[in-house]
Image 1 (tube, rainbow, N blue to C red):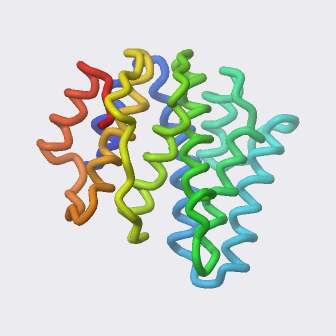
Image 2: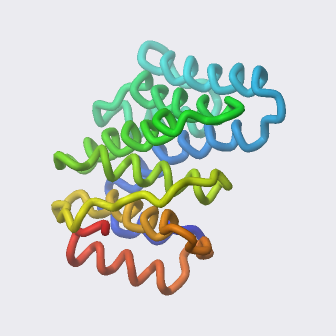
Length: 202
C-alpha cells in the first residue's frame, strides 16, 4: 500500500476518478524518468506524453487508458490536456546531470493548482505546499536535499486537506537526517488524521 491509497479515501467519492487521472499522468511521467538511462531518449518520451495530452484538447483520446481517463475525468471538469501536460517540464529537470531544484519543486506547484481546482478551493500558500510535496517525493526517489522548512503552522481550509495531506507527509520525509519511513505506516496514517483535523502541514 502507498500513501496515495490512504489519501485517496479523503477525497470526495465523486472526485476520486479525477484524482486517479491526474496523479496517474504524474506517475506515468515519473516512470519515464525512472526507466530512462539516456537523457535524450527520456526527453523524447516525456515530450510524447506532453504532446498527446495537448492533442486531447481538440481530438479524441487514443487507446491509452491514462489519456482516456484524462479525457473522461479531467477535461469535462474544465482542466485541459495542455494544463496537465505542463507537468512534463518538472519531470524533464530530472534528466539533467544536476536537477534544478526549483524546476523539480515547480512540478508540485502545478500539480496542486490543478488538484485544487477539482476540489474548488484556494489558499494563498497552496503553491508552497505543492513545492514541499514535490521535494518530498524527490527525497523518496533518492535526491539528496537540505532540510526544508514547513509552513509555520499555517492552517489549510478543510476542502483542501485531501490534497495538502500530501505536503504533510512530505515534511516528514524532508526532516534533516531523518530516515525515510516506509509508506502507509500507522505513524503516517496518524499524521494524515491530524492534518485532516487541524489542517497544518508543519
